[in-house]
Length: 166
Image 1: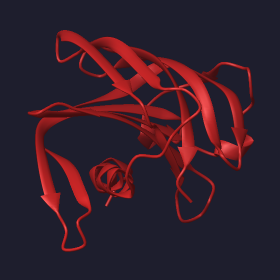
Image 2 (image 1 turned 90 degrees about the horizontal axis):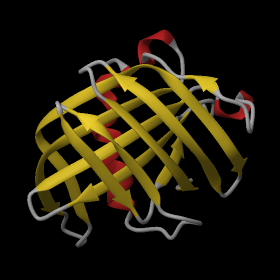
Image 3 (image 1 turned 30 degrees about the vertical axis):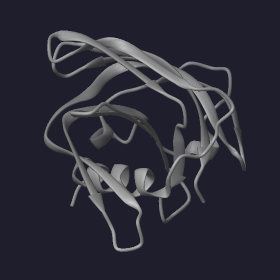
């Protein structure tokens, strides 16, 4: 399975963790699918992959009908320079990347009462160019901003201060 295929599972896992307070909310604006796009997230989350080398920041917002997420994949997170614009591109190219996913909200409740949110029939767009600037990175989380052109002809710009989940 490639990195693109694993992201929906990652999103569901992050959302299952629950709300974790963060230093500041996240915000994303732009154009996705030919329409204005806006997302506000009060509790952005970040998690390292099994190797600890890469990290994914998940920004999400759910309405009564829609789940919207922006996933910021930080390749080699501990090696990325702070306060310096870093090139964003395609995930398959091994660069930091951005993915936007919007779909119909599906809520499943596990036997232990934990709600799992996912997006049915999701529309996706992936970064093809842009920049990412990390302001901080420590054991508690990561904060930064980004501007990316998407493969659907749109773009997103935003900021985040995400809490590490593990």
